[in-house]
Amino acid sequence: MGEAYDHGMARWGRADAGDLGREALAYADTLYNLARYLTRSPTDAQDLVQETYARALTAAHQYTPGTNLKAWLFRILRNTFLSQYRHERHNPTVGGLDTVAPTSPGAEPAQWLRGDLELDRLRKVVGEEIERALMSLGEEARTVILLDLEGLTEAEIALVAGCPVGTVKSRLSRARAALRVLLKDYAR
Amino acid sequence: MTCEDARDRLLDAQRARLAPETRAALQTHLQTCAACAHEEAAEALLSEVLESRLPQHAAPVALKRRLAAEWAGAPAAAPSPSRRWGRYLIPAAAVAATVLLIVVPLTYQPAAERASARMVTEAVNDHLRILSSRHPLDIESGGIHQVKPWFEGRLDFAPVVRFDGDQDFPLRGGAVGYYLDRKAAVFVFNRRLHTISLFVFRADGLPWPTRGLRRVGGVDAHVTTSRGFNSVLWRDGELGYALVSDVDPVELARLAERLAPTS
Image 1 (cartoon, helix red, strand yellow):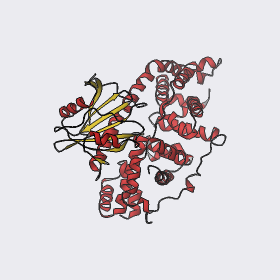
Image 2: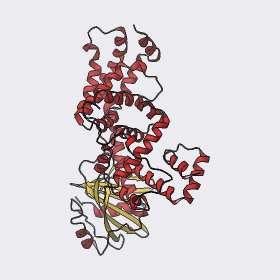
Image 3: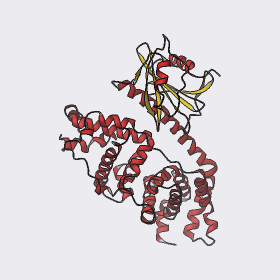
Image 4: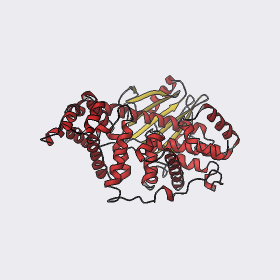
């Protein structure tokens, strides 16, 4: 009997283990959605989610009851993606976030950002255009935008991404700026 | 507060994460800085667009069944499970085995209801855009027979509208708009000083509400109130309809009766 087991079971009784399984499966849609945007493939997304649940079950003793289970599952899914899928299959079409120029608050906005022009274009974009724009971002940008959409706090996103909260804040800001730049080309 | 400070806090303000004094300082700055006010509007719109229009991919039912089955079957797959696995998996597997029968259907229903609620939210948001737009109409009305032909070549479907407008509900005009992930024909009616928006769009692939339906004309319509706006949503063949206004719900239902098919 391993120490990890004893430690885990000290926190997880039999009923708790059942609760964990039930709660974890309730996030299947949410996990699959992130997996689709990460892998870009329905088949890969299914494999990724299945592997995520397998790893979650194995690592159940590491989960602390009362913390955000969804964020914990997201972390496993993303780590699994990075270790198994990213390098083998689909690399981002656009470089990482560091290649995206952030908006400079003090700088003059480009002409299209002024007035109502950008707002008018944003109002007219449709789902497939937003999806296309999001998919053209790097993995870090896609992840941070999707996790923010899922309602995770910056601290929870930091847990998933394995980086400081300050990094999450800047990544999210850059990712949204990049998305706005991409969307300006749509809805014309 | 500087512009840099303000823009750093726009998303926090959207997420209601600011302390009251910081929020007040931000509001003061936004009232005096047009560039930051634009940034705030653009960031808010981006959030709204992402939340309401980015396609959400649901896990295939086959995957959910497989997950539940594999969890339930995990102990059998390991003939000599360690005490660790046995003690953990047995209760987990017992529950997982019931997930497919009990929990998954329960989680589906709220998800379906949330998806349906998004249809109402989108209709209200679209109506608000018309109310706030300086030029909501692409074609001013000279009657339905002038408005409907105007849509030719602008949409990938032909909007069917059964009511031409009358003295009670005059037709003001139309425009091309968007409803969720697709184009929509927008017809704007009036009722006294109230604006009524009718959105006509392709109905396929949308999570049409299955609860709270009421008979309107010859169709079952979803009648509800959201954020003070009354809405009526129905499907007629390949086309979907969303009627939204702050007009009295009884009066909105009267207009819906005229627009919906009779049988």
